[in-house]
Amino acid sequence: MNLKSNPAIAAICIVSFSAFLSLSLQQKPWPVPDAAKNKKNPVALNDASIASGKALWGTHCKSCHGTKGLGDGPKASQLSTDPGDFTKTSFQTETDGALFYKTSEGRDDMPGFKTKIANANDIWALVNYMRSLKKGGITPTTPTTPTTPVKDTVKKVEKPVVVTPPPVKKDTLKKENPPVIKPETLTVQEQITRLATRVDSLERLLNSVKARVDTLK
Image (tube, rainbow, N blue to C red; front, top):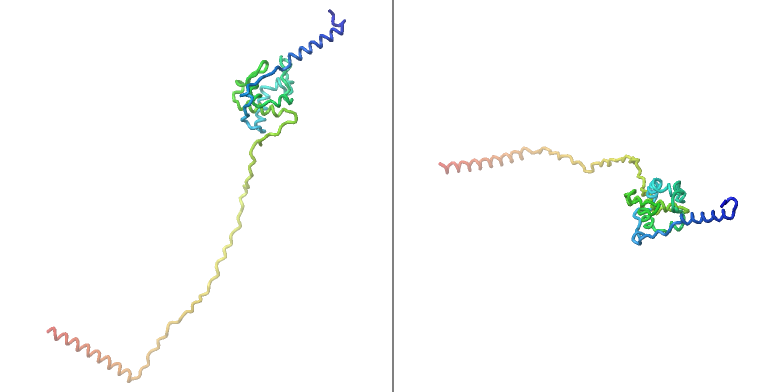
């Protein structure tokens, strides 16, 4: 049968082939165990983890899923299954645990990466990058690095302290001059009387000494 001579039959063949191709590329359901589906992502969704996941995406995923997750990578046409569009709501509504499970285990054309990416946290970071592919993007829940106040490294020069000496106190104590002893002015009679008194005292002392000497003889 010459298809060129029968356009109607040619059109039917083209439609049939397109339908077959569409069915062959259509993704079949991919069930995920509840335990895996409910796993929480231990890697914070922030700029750092998204950047780490993006690097892994460029190495392992971009060739099939495309740069922006649209399923238009250079190897996508060689696949027997549809690589999917990761920007769609149907993909983005899947849990982090489900995406981690599918990335780790793989299926059909999709290889499992649990051996190629040995560190589980790296796969979780890859999941965080998949979240950034949704339409409109995402806002990281935590900052990349904590904000720390910048300390002032300029040393402050303290003003010199001016010490004012206390005022000199004036000596409030009145200095007393030593008393002036004036020589006694005695009359001749007074001098004779004092001399006689001393003589009498000496005579009594002499008599006392003699009496003691007599007792010793």
